[in-house]
Image (tube, rainbow, N blue to C red; front, side, top):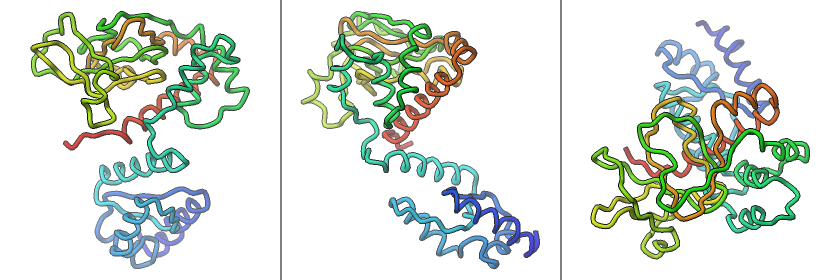
Length: 293
C-alpha cells in the first residue's frame, strides 16, 4: 500500500460512506499500513481516534469521513454491535424491552380490532409505524403458525431438545428458569406469576421461583408480545433452556421451520417482515443483557 492508494482508494471510500451515514471500520491492520493511513489522514491520529470512539458511544452522532482502525476483528464487531443497538434505542425508545403491554392486551382481546392480533405485536416489537400494506400482509399470517394453549407449569419445550419452532406469547406469560447444575427435568414445577413476586424483586426481570424445597430462579419472563426460542431455532442447535407456562390458559403462537419455508416461497414480503422482527428481538436481548462474563 502506497500513499496514492491510501488516499485514492481508502480515503475516497471513507468519504463515500460518510455521505451515506455509514461508518467504515478496519481491523488487524499491519503497522506499516496503519502508519500510512494515519500519516496521510485517511484515518485519525491515535489519540483523536480514541476520543472519537468514546464520544460516539455517548450518543454524539459524529461522522468524520475517516477509516476507523481496530486492533482485532472482535473489537470492531463488538463496537459495531453497540452502535447498532444504540441507533435502535436512540429514536425515542430509551428501554427497548419496555413495551405497552396494556395496549397490546386491549387489542388482543378486542373482538372489533381491525387487524390481526399479531399485527399489533409486530408493530410493538418493530418500534415503527407499519404501512397499511405491511399491516395487510401480517393480517394474512394465519396459515403460517398455530396457536397452542398451556396449563400453568406445563413445559412449552425442554432444554437439550430439537429446536423445531420459535414462539410469540399471545396470552399469559412464559417463564425461563436459570440453568440448573444438574440436568434432570423439573417435576411438577410450581411457577409463581410475576405479579406475586414483583415486590420481592428489585430488578425489571421479575425473578420467580420454581419448586418448593428445591428452588431455582427464573432468568427471564416473557409477557404478551414476547418472542422466545428463536436463537436456538435460527442457529439449529439443541435448546439451551427450559420454557414453562407461568399460568393457566397461556397461549403462544408457534412458528415452525416448515411454515417459514412455506412463507418464504409463497409470501416473500411477509417473510421479510418476520426476519426483521427476529432481528429486532435479537437487538432487544443484546441491549438488555446483564451478563458480566
